[in-house]
Length: 401
Image (cartoon, rainbow, N blue to C red; front, side):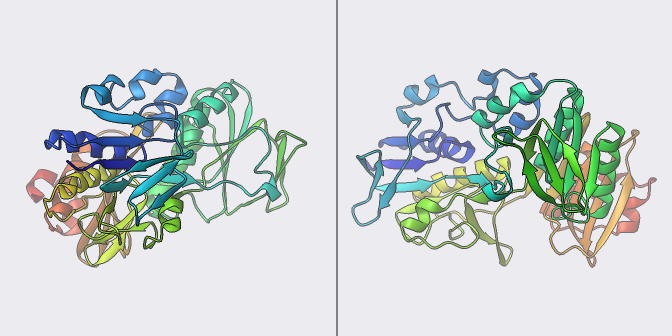
């Protein structure tokens, strides 16, 4: 039986190997991860785990014993140096591991500040791995001053945790508004008001010129000349797909590791899934950074590695938790031309509906799970209700189905 090697022990990699066994694959399976912890959930890192509301064991996707019980060789704290496509081997620390089929689930890496503007100073953190969060956790003491660079979801989630813990929080966003790349002005307005009400100082249209300090950050100079004192900083300026191994192996790259609809790369013996992957979707090529995509795509790839020949049809959805607000997003809003707001049944609940012309693209639902679920089903079913009907408070959303 064939030996399947999976590089990357995150959500996609863990889902892929579990699915292989679930489907009855009896050959050897090896899962290689660079971190010391077994595969774990990332979303709670910047929320419940950082708040201290979740023990580390609850982060684990499965008990570590699961891998041995299912005859999956789990190799942690292991970096892969290279892929030899001709001989079908991967090299880890001088050791060569042969494969019949290989899956790349290498995920993504956070963008960091350049050293030239203080990115290498002590007290400058990113939020991506368990180690990242463990390193920054001691910084979260009441009254300390934190600068958050970047007004995307990671930055806003970190701001919410810091504010709840009683810190003095300043967030800077170089674009004209927070969430500018991913959401409508209406959604930006909602979350700006939410954070301001919790004491977060949000500076939009202001960039970071440099962090200051000798060996550790003590302050920041902003693009408008403002200087502020800080005790530590969190950088949330996006992530990039981890494609270095694939590039070095000569695989095709296009905003991630390029795959066909089944998850196969330009090498027929190598597959890819998760954040690192770009794939065809509705006549375009996209890359999705989300847990649901990592799971669904990995499970589809597992089926196809065993010969299913099944095209992956993504159903994009995302979420973010900030304070007592749960944001749920269905669909992709890229290319929207019109936005409509529907007030929810409870105070603070509302939904934002994105249209391109008459076609419904996406829904942002804030503490409104009903709007999210119905919006998701409408989008997946290719239905686009009249926006005037959607925003009419007298409309029963369920009737739109």
